[in-house]
Amino acid sequence: MLKILDKYILKKFIGTFVFSISLILAIFIVFDISEKLQDFIAGNVPLKEIVFDHYLNFLPYYGNLFSPLFTFISVIFFTSKMANNTEFVAIFSSGTSFKRVLRPYMIGAAIITFTSLVLSHFVIPLANKTRFEFEDKYINTSYHTDEINIHKQIAPNTILYLSNYDNSSNSSSQISIEKIVNNRQTYMLKAENMSWDSIKKIWKLENVFERNLIFTQSDSLKTKRKFLYTETHNFSPSKELKIDFTPKDMIRFQSKIEVLPYFELKQFILKEKQKGSSRIEYFEVEMYRRTAFPFATFILTIIAVSLSSRKIRGGVGLQIALGLVLSCIYILFMHISTTFATSGLAQPLIAVWIPNFIFSFIAFYLFKKAQQ
Image 1 (cartoon, one colour):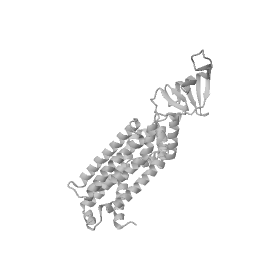
Image 2 (cartoon, one colour):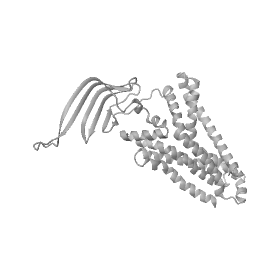
Image 3 (cartoon, rainbow, N blue to C red):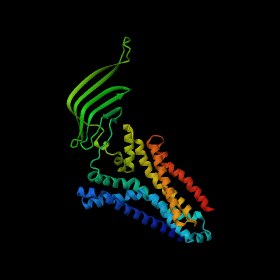
Image 4 (cartoon, rainbow, N blue to C red):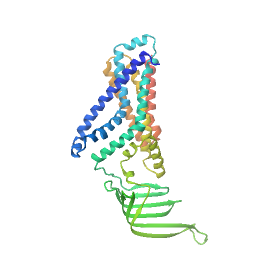
């Protein structure tokens, strides 16, 4: 049951957090409008779509992105004010331990963490889908992939090669499909052009050459070859082809994973592993980050309380400055560790959680020091 002290601190915690995050989001919206205003006017974008499709889905993404940072700043701000008003002197003088004072902070951090987890895994991906569709329709209309010599595994032992890809026409030139079984090529297809038929949901190929190889085991002692094969060729001016590859596989991969809720993302990663995708690390980092980042709220809350519960020379300003420095270091660690993961230098799960592990030790040290 919450005591008067718990309710008092929790009210300050949640109130300060909501006020600060609302203020920064309002500032973000103003800057975003000033940046995209010309695109909105040039595209004659309806006001309803700007408000409901873009900015209504803009708020949960950026609010959740900055929630650990502003949790930290909020705790530093109101706790240091309480310390300067000697409120903690009265609390500790009554025999209340530092560990007991930490209880309402942990309750507040738990509320924010739970909300952030739900937003990260389920709400924000759906909001991103609408937001990305809006941006692709009115802002990112000129997006073009710069990938060349693209290789995609479209089935077991089957590789699709594209020399290039045009997002605007959903077409490619100089493509090939090769099937390898037991280190031997059993099928090959080459075509000069490939384009997507959006009605039939199939690919149309032009000037197609196909080669089939059928291997048989040799029983002759005279031949040095263990296997013999027969080969057939076929040429056709056009061909319709249905494969496990669509234009969706060539959109920005960030858009692909950021619109998938938790269970869909897990299935997507499993499917990409079966295809032999080269970007598995990016997808796994996104999945693990959605959990690791909200839990940073607990760690940063403990650090913030430990730093600001004592009245120090320099006042609130120095404590907030110190808090911002630590927050920047945490964000830097997060970027460095995820870079290691996407570069293949570390396992994504370990890399994403490393900043939390490191800052947990810092939080424990500061907590012990604050108890003295």
